[in-house]
Length: 328
Image 1 (cartoon, helix red, strand yellow):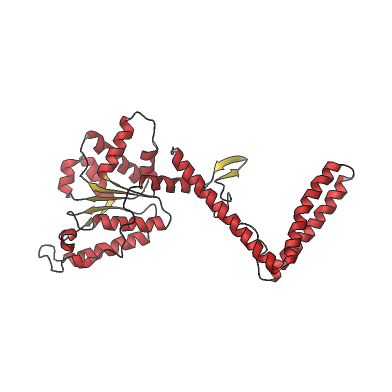
Image 2: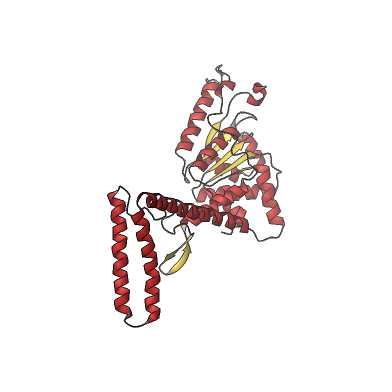
């Protein structure tokens, strides 16, 4: 899939910073040991000089083999002495080596496989994370947590029709969402959150998003109107940019808020269906929030679309009265 130049730069910067931090930490460890054991610093300096001497011996000609062999043996002996000083004093023998985040490519983003230079999996993950961050730039992802979800706004009176109070019902919904977030993976089930305005659908979906992001998953959050507007701009601008649609399909979790409030057209319905269907075929989860009932969905969307959602998503009904009004 294609990414914008800004996403490539952000991902490259992320890996560069990881590499730099690992190398700086290794230098700090060296300085720490040098202060305690000056002999190590002296040996490291001689080892460095040994490399220069080897190069000079090669350039000078003459009996190069013996000279290089002698210098190599000296260097190996000094390296062995450094390792012994480290291990005798409780340090691992590789204490001076950078502890890179990615062991496959040493945070370079690319590695050699069978003689070919290929993009490392850590670069792929960084690209997805940066692309998600770019799409989420204006999303309120940090505003909602499970801790800030207050059940006291829900009525504790039992509804005679439902045989349960909104408080008890929403307690179960909250526990389900917390368990979903705790066990989230890129193949978790999808969720359809239904209920009137102001009952906490957006809050809980964003709380799930926050937990997934903390664990390193790529999450994209967008309201249905924002999503459709962005796709329309791309489609009708005649620019060959498939990265947004690809990201919506390939990210670990897609959250579509306020389904049903977007401008309805054949284009919007088909695009939303294509995104949802593509993710279902790839076994990737979607969380959809809507104020509409199933009947409303059937009236506004195609039967195929509603059937796909209802058949592949856990339905969570949100009960109660608008908690935003109750807060006031």
